[in-house]
Length: 56
Length: 479
Image 1 (cartoon, each protein chain N blue to C red):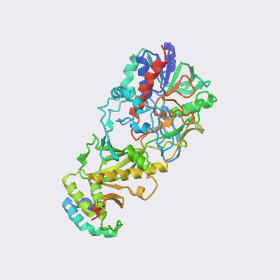
Image 2: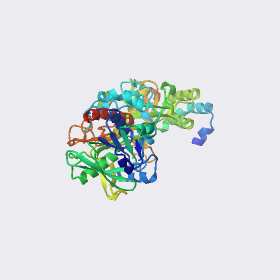
Image 3: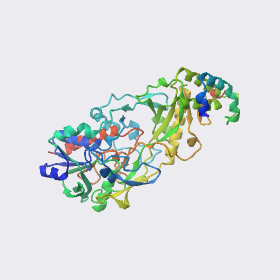
Image 4: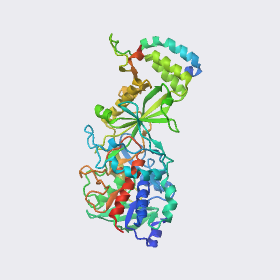
C-alpha cells in the first residue's frame, strides 16, 4: 500500500480521495445522525476525534 | 581543588564541614553555594573525570515489573553525573504539580512552587537557559506548554575549572561512599572505597546525599540496614514512591497549519492539560509531544482519514498540497501516580565490586495512568477539532485496550522519588528542607525528593531545589 502511494502524484491522491467516500461504507459508522444532531459535536470514530460534520 | 584519589585528598589536610556525595547537578550546585558562603565542603565522586565501563558496572541492577532500561545505561557514574547525557529540555514543575489531588492518593508537596521561584534566576545562569516563557492556553482544557531547550550543560565540564580553583571546595574523584554510619540522630561517618579498595571512613559535620534518583535510595537503604536503622530512623517510605515519565507514541494528528504552533529547533511542540481538565477527568498531568511526520506517513494518515471522514480528508489533502508540513506523531509522556509499591529494593543475590547490594527496581504503570494517556489524547483531539486546528487519531493499541507497545521510548530516564519530601514520616523520608526525618545532619538532594513528577523534565526543578537547599545549609552550617 505504502509503495503504491509513494508512486502516486499529489494530484492523483486528491482525485482518489474524491472517490473515496464509497469506502466509508466498509468501515464502522457512527450512529446515524439524529435529525437535529449538532454538527459541532465531537465524536470518536475508528480512533479519529472528529466533529460530527466531518462525517457528512 | 580536584583530587584524583582519596589518598591525595587526605594528604592535603583539607578540613571540610560538609560532605556531599555525588557531583551531578544537585551535588555540584549545593557545593558551589556552600563554597560561595565560605563553608569548606568536600564532594565525593565515585567515578573519575571520564566515562569508564569499570565505574559504570557499579550501576548494574535488575528490574521487576514493566519493561525498563538497563540500570547501568539509564544514568552515568562520573564527574557531572547524568548531566553528561541529558538532552537539555528545561521547565519547572507547574504550580499545580505541588498541590494534593483528591483523586490521586499521596500527591502534594510540603512546599509550593513559590518556594523555588526565587532561585530560577540562578538556575537560568547555571543551565544557560533562554528566557522562560509563559504557557499559551489554546482551550479551557489544553495548554501549549513552553519547554525551553538549554545547551544541555555538562556540570563536570562546565564547572571543573571553577571547582579546581576554589579554596572552599574539594572534589575527590574515584571515591565511592559505600555506606553511611549513624546513631539514629546523626550520621557519624562514611565508609569509603577508592581506586578499587577500602579507604577507611570519613567524617564531617553534615552529609548531603546527591547520588541520583536511584542511587540515593540504594545508599540509604544499605546504610540503614548496616546501622540497624541509625541512618533513616523513619524508613517506612525509604525507596518507595519511585516514579518515571513513561513515554509512548499515542497517535497522530493532521494539522490545518503546522505553523500554527511555533515549534522548537527540532520541530517539536508540547501540550498539557489545565488543572480544571485534570480535576474533571480525574487524571494525572501529561505532556503531548508533537513531532513533525515524514511526508509518506502523512499520506497514509490522510488515506485512513478518508475512510472515515472523506470531506475532511479531502480538505486536509488540499492543505497538504499547499504545505508539506501538516501532520505529526503524538508522543505522550505522563505523570505517574505515586505508588508505594513502585520501589527500590536491595538485591538479595547480587552485589557490586565493593560488596554493596545492587538495586532491584520494582516498577509498574497503573490503571490511572492508562486512563490519563487515553483521556489526554481525547482532550487534545477535542481541542484541535473544536478550534479547527486539526484532527487527532488515537493509536489502535490504546483504543483497543492492548498492552503497551514494546518498541517505544518507554520512559524519559527521569528517576524520581524514593526519598520523597513530606511531613508524614510514614510516607516520606525528608522534610520540607530536604533533611532526613529524625536526623540532625543528613540531607538529600536531587529528584529522589520529588513527591510527584509532573509532566516535565526534572533537571530544572532539581537545580532549583539544590539552590534552595544550598541556601538553607549556608544558614544552618556556621563557619
